[in-house]
Length: 178
Image (cartoon, rainbow, N blue to C red):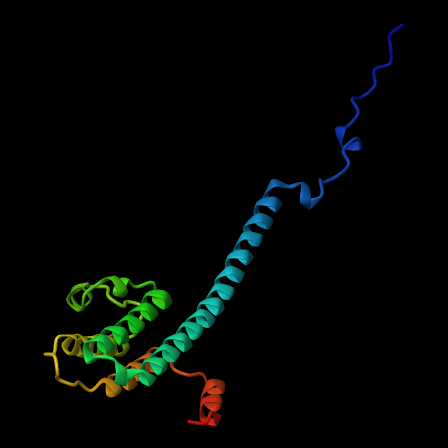
């Protein structure tokens, strides 16, 4: 007697179907890439807002320092005042734009090809011109009086050229008593 030979059973009966999508390695690659991309975009957006806020605070600090210097201008020599105005402006530029202007002479600043590269061309020109005026005043002969009050006002104007006031700041400035 011969044994009954049965057909081989199809393996499809034992398969459970397609695996769920989350078990696919491509799913995880896409998920991780998407999360990293979203994190990068969020980081860039918050960093930009933080930088603008930081620069506004630095601007206010610089203007307050210039105003304080204006109050004590009569007790200082013109050369000393010019140095202090220059330092206030250079400290602002170094802190706000990470530019090494604080650690350079005017000649080095002028000759450096990427000096104040984050500023627009007209802002960069205004800053360099003002720093040159201050340098000239630093080296006037003793006894000569320079236009210190004008230079302080010009420094404040230059800072406002770099960081124009937003509409809500303009309205606050207009309401403030002078």
